[in-house]
Amino acid sequence: MKKKRVFSGVQPTGNLHLGNYLGAIDNFVNLQNKFECIYCVVDLHAITNHQDPKQLKSNILETVASFVASGLSTEKNIIFNQASVAAHSELAWIFNCVSRIGWMNRMTQFKEKAGSNKENASVGLLVYPNLMAADILIYKATHVPVGEDQKQHLELTRDIAKKFNNDFKCKDFFPIVEPLISKDIPRVMSLRNGKKKMSKSDDSDYSRINLKDDKDLINLKIKKATTDADSIPSEISGLKDRAEAKNLLSIYASINKTNLEKVLKDFGGKNFSTLKSSLSETIIEKICPIGKEITKLLQDEKYLTTILKKGTNKADLIAKENIKEIYNLIGLTKFT
Image (cartoon, rainbow, N blue to C red; front, side, top):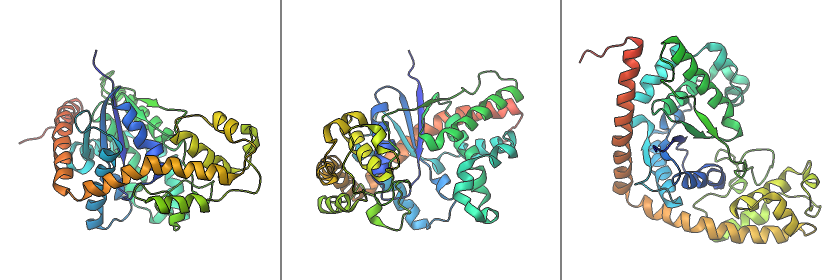
């Protein structure tokens, strides 16, 4: 029986952190044994905000190095960068013509990213959900791993697929993609503010654990992580309005492959210094080997570009076949 196909993309921001690892990459490693997986470095999405051209290339390679160092197999998976497969952009334009302006205006993530100055935001930032839909549907992916903040975009992808199938009378041409939502995947928050997502864009480096941080820096960052004066509760109800406490406990649960209830049972009544000590040890044991391997891989640019070329060739074969069918369905012809 043919494996179901998973697609997911990661923006090449460079210097990936613990939130990227626990929220996405670790799950990718688990999925590679159950599905046919396509993992894309979404560089076209990255340029919705201005990027330094030289740094962008470096970030693409570092993202690939992070994938491989974390355990993603280059044999089991297709790993490539988005800009190398032209069909992503071709289908995105078609979806710009299928999708509705009202759908774009309802996207909450655009409102959050554009802020109060949305008139100065790029058009790309507004319509990039259409490109996201193209990323998924150009491979006729059946499943996409999503977090809470991506659910709305996946719903849009489903709406676009349904509308395309209906508009061009091609029932079931595009699959109605299903979300892969794991309750065990946390939304990792800042170590300085438990109400903000862990992010590279945060001014303070102490707000995150970077995958390339060494043992001493991890220890220091966890030690300085914001908590409160109360002890650790034994029940989840005791974490109400304690965002920083919940964040550290959730990170501990996730990296130890357990649940929050079990962690609270083990640490309930203790102070946070005890938890922080155990958390540092666990993060160091898991993350430091990955960081060392990333550094090693980054010294071999030829190897990383070979991975991307190999992945691009495989992805392009699938995408070209599908874009040809799409062109036929809508009446476009390439006179070549």
